[in-house]
Length: 246
Image (cartoon, rainbow, N blue to C red; front, side, top):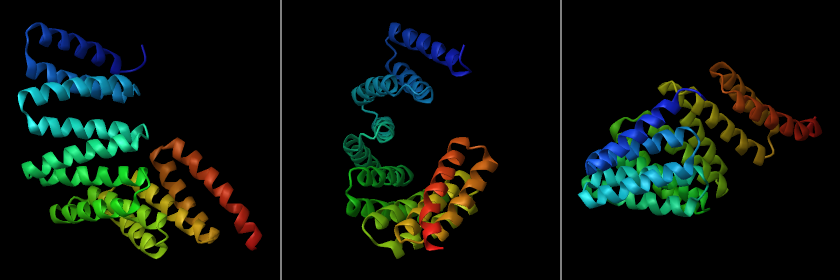
């Protein structure tokens, strides 16, 4: 057996068979969503995708717009993770339209955040700026620090890619501050790394190394071993220009 998720997977498979045998469409939809979530956790995106798509068809048949929107978002995030950004953009947009019609501001904010990330993924940084700015406004209105920090980070990325380095620095610094306030240490470290990239592109390796070192300390503290290794590689790579400056 490979850890805890396997019994859960079998449980939901059996529950799905039961719901289908009873022609219980709501139960079938709910179970497919949970099954998809388990597959995603297990690192099986194709199986998760199949479950979410089946659930989406049922939600549409039942006319449940909220569940339809949530499933579109789940599919969009899967496509994001698979770097299939054009499909992610399409599904984020569909979800966004539903949440706007339902006047569900938190979900609208989340969909805009995802859409901004996906737009950056396809290289449309101007559209990414627009999405992240709208999402940032909604997050600030609701007081959602996590969404606010995420969108400040998204703005930082888009500005960096467009060559607006000072604006990128400003937004990343704000994102770092908010992540600290929210106690989100992992994303605090990620924003520090992203800020370091700006300084590397500005040919300021000393400042970049300091930020990578700070991020490495955070990742070490929280046990994010893969990110500790990644930051060490970034530090080693950045030391070359630093030594040449000295």
